[in-house]
Image (cartoon, rainbow, N blue to C red; front, side, top):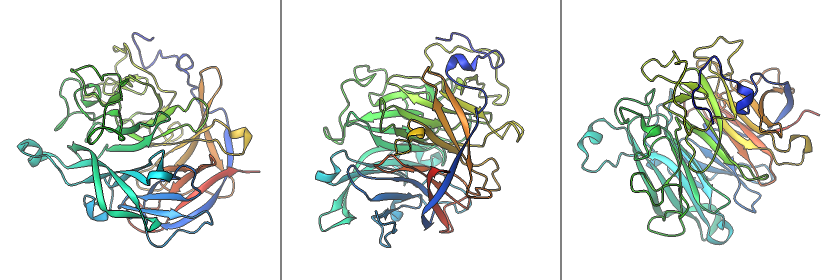
Length: 431
């Protein structure tokens, strides 16, 4: 356990990371869907060969096994979504998870940004932005390609001070519980309206923001607390919290193989991006840390040489952000989490495909990367070289995975959720 940590003296190898990519992995991208509008995710229900595409505007579409995107959406909740800014927005339909017994009960869950439900809290009514919801729906009894829109069961409602840092990936773990990621509430540096002044939301165990939550949607009303949640018996903390100290966990996933690790990419402030393996009770540092570097929320670009890191878990991968570092040494502006490959290509088994939204805000310059576990606890980060394109020009909003373990990447042309020209590619070996 590190007790004190400096930005200059840090030994990355000791933390399970390499400083530079070992080499570039050659891949090809095969287009599987186009004509989409800001796709954030593509996943399949258990034991189902359909792939479901989440669009930020509030639509879920089906990509059939035959490669056709059905004209009629599976789910349309655009009327429930907060109005989205066409230039850039972080609100919207953010997550989708299928119940482990989906084939029998038809239940699935969505996470979305909707109208503020602040009740009689005047401060929130005046200043806060929206609420993030997790809701349960079911498949229509008469059409397996359509959701039943007549009934929505709200599972969680979390009020949000700003439009950004929503997180709200959702997914069922191998334990059958539903996991929910939450960002720190938005704005910057985890301070300001809606943030705990002295320690930030990320470190506040009484606040919903900056956490991984874990709940039991099969019991309770609207849910129960798993008995082994870290603070299930602690009245000084929220019982739903599974892990904390996160800034904006933008896309998590459970490994289909191995030990089914939960991996989350956490968007940094200005200097560093990170990827974490989430463990029960883990503290991932924010707002005290930005990746493996000490952080001062009043001077975000000037990292202190030392800070107290007692009990904090360090990332498996970090890289430099182009907000601060020069183009030749930085890797992007905003990390985007992906999936561990478990497909048929044996050489890729266990590789974690992820990416970065873009190296440039004004130009679509997204990147794809892989993280490789060396077997000794050390992870390396490697570039991905797309061999069948002169240049991969897109913003990378998300990734996808099918039940065969293949991994996909979303390619978006615009800053905001507009246009309808976006695509999804399957990542395949170059040879």
